[in-house]
Length: 228
Image: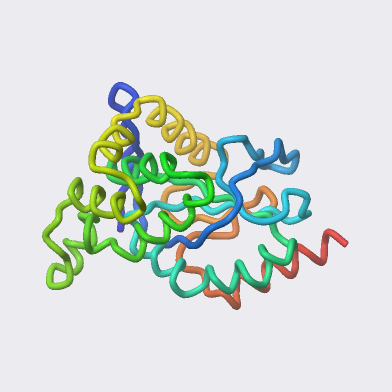
């Protein structure tokens, strides 16, 4: 993935940025704390997992349509969650940094679901990019399915328990466009984000891409040691 164009059309999201990269999975808490003071701020609308009182905060900026994000989700996130998030060592924050308008639509559907279903729906989006993601279709035409973006997202929304009408209503939510745009612009101005996934550890960027779990683990262990 390459290229980066921020586009905002009457509040309709989205930042088109270069770079491919990955994301994550499963269910968890979405309770955020007012936060930070060390180069980051946790806001009430953040989707989070783990202990808000943890001394190490890992923020991931990702896009549901990003194939590298999907790879990180599949290859590393479950280990990250088990070793660091579920044990209370790391407070994890997930933020959508749209690469295209479709990411904003997917994020709006996820946020229409009950709080405890948000992360499982993001995981569903990653695992089923073939059903709705334009980029997946371009990169893997033989594997893509014929639903198209809208019908593909409706299909996944229905799998999650929503009706077609509910999915359409969620995607038309203009207030969410404004929030998504703000997350994108803040990430770009604060951390110079140009692609996904990008990881912010206690307020400092530790890089972008499908970071192998062993590398991520070393970075987290080093930061945890500093806090003791």
